[in-house]
Amino acid sequence: MWDPIMSYQEIVDNEFIEAMKNINIIPEKVVIITIQRSHSGDFCSLIINFEKEELEECYPATDFDYKDLFLNNCSVCFTQLESMPEIDLSNNDNNSDEVFCCDQLKLYKNRRTTKDEEFKNFIKSTGSSSYIFHMKKQINFGKIIFEKYFSLKDGIISEVDGDKLSKVHTFKNYKCQNHNMFYGIDLYSKSKSVYNKHHMRIYPYQNINMEVLDLFKRDALKKKKSTNIDISSLSLDNEPTYNDYYSSSDYSSNLNALDFNACDSQCGYCGQCDY
Image 1: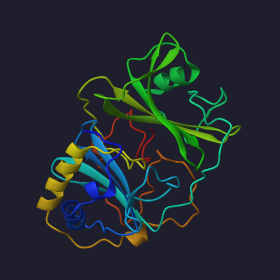
Image 2 (image 1 turned 90 degrees about the vertical axis):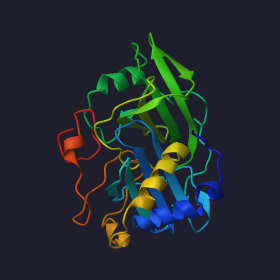
Image 3 (image 1 turned 135 degrees about the horizontal axis):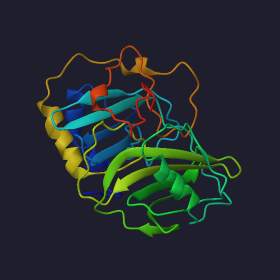
């Protein structure tokens, strides 16, 4: 179901290109697309570099607008960008397999969720949790050092298998200014199925799920093609900040409004309410 080493040619086939065009996603330059099976924890996320014909691991500079689209069986978030930014590939003293570089991590663009205590305990290595923590450790605005899944039991953090988990749409970001490190942490459930009331925000990391991708292609190819969208109008006026991987988009007037009936207090994605 999930294959991190599939090639550009295997993913970006003619059927996928036609599906994108049918919902007015232009297959040019850099396209970031996140597809979620409706109300589930199953998703597929791609960063497609059409000019180089490559699938990118992540997109480091992510303060950009994106568009939401709802198909029969899935929701889609996407944006089109001019190019890939330069990624810091330099070495770092903390490029080790240690879970955290130190104990001085600070929340980055924090939003209140109903799962705050879970993250607090994980960062401080205290207590136990029924959830699995999916963490990406990387150099700030740079390369990913590792992407791992962890459990928390009796204050002990242990690496676990990431198979057969379902994503819960709750997250936290952390930074360490002392070591120039960034941590993106998502919650996963051990349950085979999770019901998420709200749809997923754009997720600028690669996560290939062929079942969800095939579902998207079926839905998109059935949808009537509408008026083309000038995606170039979605650019921001201000300079982007970096590594806000989990920030919600700044919805401009030409974007569809979110379905706020789909939100609940564990969300924190849209930025349009108190959470």
